[in-house]
Amino acid sequence: MSLVVKGLPILPLYQAVSASFAPLSPLVLYCRRKWRQEQFDRTGERFGWPSLARPEGPLAWLHGASVGESLSLLPLIEKLAARGFNILLSTGTTSAAAVIAPRLPAGSLHQFLPLDVPQFLARFLDHWRPDLALMAESEIWPNLFLEIRRREIPLVLVNARVSQGSFRRWRWIPYFIESLLECVDLCLAQSEADAERFAKLGIRHVNVVGNLKYDVIAPPADRNALASLAARIGARPVWVAASTHRGEEEIAMAVHRALAHQFADLLTIIVPRRARRGDEIAALAGAQGLAALQRSREAPDDSLPDLYIADTMGELGLFYRLARIALLGRSLVRPGGGQNPIEAAKLGGAVLHGPYVESFAEVYRALDEARGAATVADADTLARVVALLLNDTGKLGKMARAAGETVKRLGGASAAIMAAIEPHIVQLMVEKRRWEA
Image (cartoon, rainbow, N blue to C red; front, side):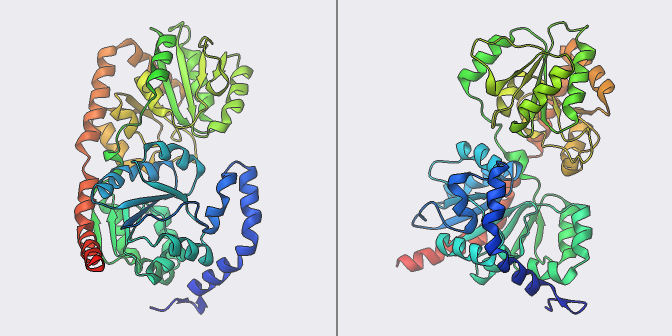
């Protein structure tokens, strides 16, 4: 297929430009370290230099860019490990690495994905020599795909999705995206809409298998931390605003002020999407006359004031267990898109969310239809719904059960994916036996 669009060789031009970027990449990574977006002692992985040895035997490589994508791969990782594969998981963000590392099966390896520069990716692939590559959701990197195809590694898109906006943008460069998607052996899409878009973009083999996120085991919580916090909270009414973004903390504080006269000892827990924003949120609370305590700065015997700011990493499972009412952030303000509500639902929570949930539209639609979730458009509506649920434990329990039953019913994607990639697995095992003979 031609890689020329209106006289411009798009893909070769991209490769040339990205290769020339290599001398500037140390500066870029230096800036990212200053912004706390890179781990200083593992920067070499971004250049394709491995920090671990490749284990002997078949290797399945899975990639999830951020926290949500990497967590969704856990059911597949466990199933592939049970089939005899060594596991390499790569992520794009340090937050994903911090959350996923404690939850990986024993023996699994983690690396950061190199920058999309040909020589960096070649170094990465030449070291790891994966037998199977599985990319989660919407990760489409030109040099990455081309280097995988050059080595004839089976490439599968799992939990694949493409938004309507991304689809429209890719359609502006049809030959470019078609050429890249020729590298994909199989696309396993989350929904019929995603499958249709991928097919129109040029993927030949597309199946709909559902959303892997429904199969992810609920996030863990440290037993001692859970017991300690539960004792400190006691019988106080409590709710949590989880994975909040700028603008949403003010809404949570407004709700707390509105309900404080009705629930004198109300505890509002705010879990920001970015833990490093703890100081900023504490300052905002102080400016509004609310007493706040940051988890990252507390002493073991500190009492819990109006607001508890959970500015630590990987502890959402703890707070979902403590508060049965959960507002999911990134849904009340633009730009939104929503956050994954499945973990809250699995841990017995009634899910509240704003109107901007397009990134998880199918999940929220199912929860809303089952009345396991409710939409709140603003602070006033949110305050009324939280008050209703705190006052009516029967309604709260019914809503939480509906949420849990819904996500359980929609599971099964990991088994469907394993069935779909079984031909690749069988071929790899046959080749392994041949080599050993």
